[in-house]
Length: 189
Image (tube, rainbow, N blue to C red; front, side, top):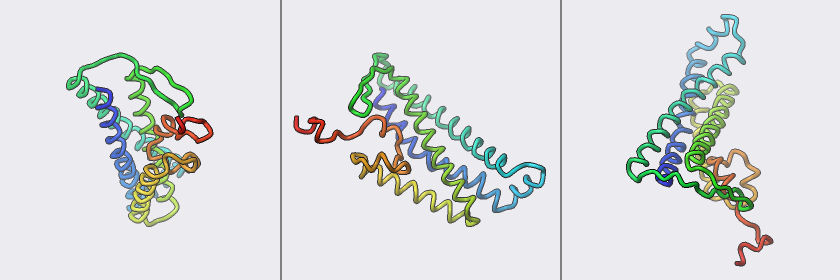
């Protein structure tokens, strides 16, 4: 049940990044393009307040959607496979292992997905703030996510992966897996 829920939540997380980027485009880019942000700025509001408000709106919208979908996925997995509340073993960076409740493990995954969504939403907002070509910046944001997703696949076992923050399309995997170095003796066994 938890494997089923974990992988469905991972797929939803992949889609949620696109939704977050799209929400930023609609809430920030389109409003700036149509002049709605300029109208709000004439009403004695600072640009930082408008920027923060749009960012918080994207945060709450994506978090609510992600939370509802995650709860539905967990309930569906319990109905299909049955629930077992035995703890699972979580290995962090191959140096320490913890016994964790599966629900806590899934909630941690959901929080990491939301951080990932917010990271790419912030990148999109900053790009749209720098350039007035909002449609182009929307495409650039999607391109950055696509490149980081591909880099995540190909660089996940290398040290450079840990040094490039935008390559962490799945921030959770950075905590769960780091490839062992040959000097650890783990590869020779």
